[in-house]
Image: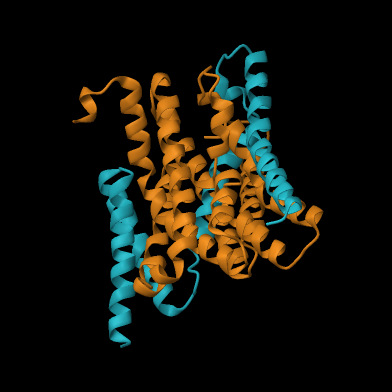
Length: 116
Length: 243
């Protein structure tokens, strides 16, 4: 890799870090200015709404299979149902994911076997 | 040794690491792919690993490698990589109310990826203030280490791994939507939130299906937030909290 390409790597690394860091520093200063009282209320409302929406968007993006064929969609649907059922019962973080991946994987393997 | 016998900060680290394990199901296969693609694009194992260590932002790294291999101008390469990562601007401020006064937090923001944010945004408010730094450090470092190690593994043995376990790379990434689902479910607290969140998910999926994954995340989130405001305007002009 050439020296100039290394410079590009460094620029992207520093830029990405600053994108993650600077808004945090801005918010911390804002919170400090407001004396730390009821810090959640001190956050602009649009920002506090955007947080959960970003998580929902990440869910939507990651839900689409890389090869969106019938098998992958069926596995996705059943994987989501399994995750939801276990989440409703346990309200924990780990087990619903294990159930989801297990179900998703089982459907993929089963369909793979059936299709020879 | 159980976590109960450890000092508080060590226990927090371990809890953070344990809760970040589902991230690995998504990180490692994608990191292996990145390592493999980098080698195919003419980068060495060290170069690919260092890119993962320094930039540490999945989608933009693939773009970086692709554009560099195609001989794109450097300014365009940098601009496009940073443009994809602009969505991360929302993450830090959303965590700020839960952060302690430790001077380590700014440094730790290097590890604030999409997935670490989603996990931290849900878990930090539930943790004691004294546990948050340790928890975040454990979770973020494990995720970072897995991404870097996965890249190196992919660069060294990606071809062999893909040939040996072709289905594993297809199955394990489902850990990510499953994780996001578990993190988003507690947000369905009212019809207003439900409508806005479902709209966000639908738009994000539509964007991805049309090849606009990176644009889809901020676009879908912005549409969801707009929907949240519009529904409020229609229901009760000028009043009420965001329940």
